[in-house]
Image 1 (tube, rainbow, N blue to C red):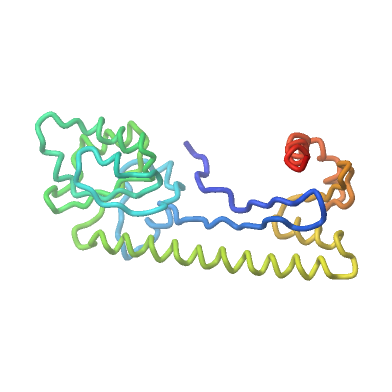
Image 2 (image 1 turned 180 degrees about the vertical axis):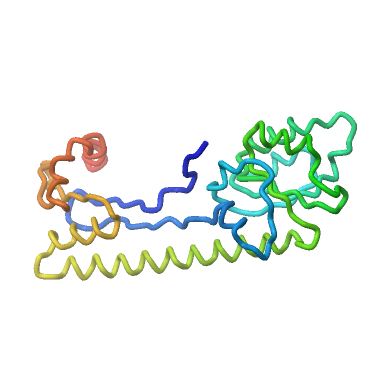
Length: 231
């Protein structure tokens, strides 16, 4: 569908007073495109080329014809398709169940027992819009799992590091000579967005950039919610 399915990279909430209440940098999991780009995995995209920006939250292996109940969404599901020879099994229904379960994509290992991905499965994946990756026989599924696990661990570490650095920068700005004005500028810089500090009456005390004052109306609902929570 061409949309970026990654979670929001930053969530920040400021109290109606002067303190920074929460600063959290969400990890960005690897995408299918990131995985395909690893040459050592030798993955081939057979369907869903338009949706390779989908994030992979985990890797799961299953040979069940209906693994949906074991999925949480966001997984790259790996299979060798042992169930495809069952009488009455419809590849389209299988792919649709995976899509409904929210998987990021399907990785199909060829060579055991299928020499290539069955055309019916490829057609079904294209029709549903589910990314389908061909995994060559010489690439064990555990190699894919390890690649995703390493990427997730690296991003989580980077997220913690970014959060620590941002907190340190905000603390330095808060205790600097300019006080809250510097804090709001630093916050806007770290978020690559605009930021405002309001007083208890809802008036703008500081804004970064200065033009952010004109966007106060966009915060009306959130300001009302915070006031109600503190009442």
